[in-house]
Length: 423
Image 1 (spheres, helix red, strand yellow):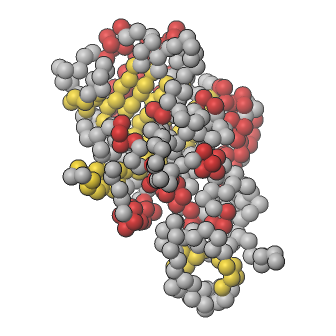
Image 2 (cartoon, one colour; image 1 turned 90 degrees about the horizontal axis):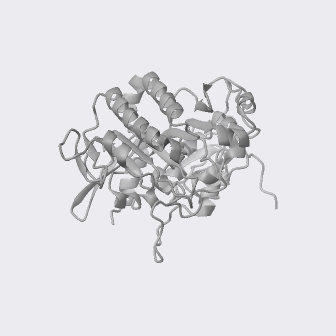
Image 3 (tube, one colour; image 1 turned 120 degrees about the horizontal axis):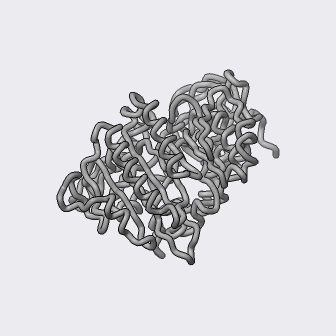
């Protein structure tokens, strides 16, 4: 099993604060692995049997259009009948259009294409789509489409990608969708479970780290609750479609709650695409929670699931790894709520928002983070994400200590609660 030591993980987390899309390489059992946090879009949609072939053909066209959009970065594609990777254009790969038309409705149709053939390395670019089979016993399933792409590429092509995503969402009648930073799963199925403990650690350090696992979050595979029970938490880009708009009170009601001047809303025939500001970010915990995310979370909360399955392949009986539990899932989904507790009540505070005057009632004057070993710049109550329950009073000039803990290096932050504990 691949394992990152503490220093390797700390270095990866530190690099992600400098640039939100970074890979971490290491060697396990003589094999070179490389895991990456990257930028992605996932769209989820239901495909009834009467339009299944139509949607399969639409997915093929979107794959071709995406390949053109990214400058032919995709180099390999999985065989549509077995999944084995081949170079795009290989004579070993049958015609996808013919396959889509002839495949029985009770079989899954999939496209898996990537810029790398490695099964243990996160690819820079991927296109993956599964159109789920129809079973009369399970009439409602979620099919999906996921795109991974380089953050640097997106910064130069954001308008083109935006247009493509809205087109794809409209053609596939997406009912929910997400665009943000998260783990880019390699094409190998087995690699999906190895990252689990590190994903939880990343989520503890970054509010913008998004759990999005299309293959494991639909109805046939979910260990606990899939996305058919409700939406995921919002991330930088979030799509809410007809079924969930009804839960949230309708298009007009949702739009009326999104008053922040930096929220961008694009209206589709049966959905809204919502963006939280100018561009996505990982949102380090020590920088506080941006109120813009709290506003979007409040508007979409009636459609949100209580808990979701983030375990991919799940755990075995003697698995002692610290991974996302159902309780963790509930806390993480509510991390942008005013009464949220993720990752810990004492490390949470809301960023001041002078542009809109929004702070959800618990904002604090912004002060710089102070590294462990430095003198306290101002008397008052401080806390550090390096250790839960760390809030304490320092006098001006007093040395602020370095602490070990689950959250990384020690940086002391001014507490939004300046009251002394009640005895």
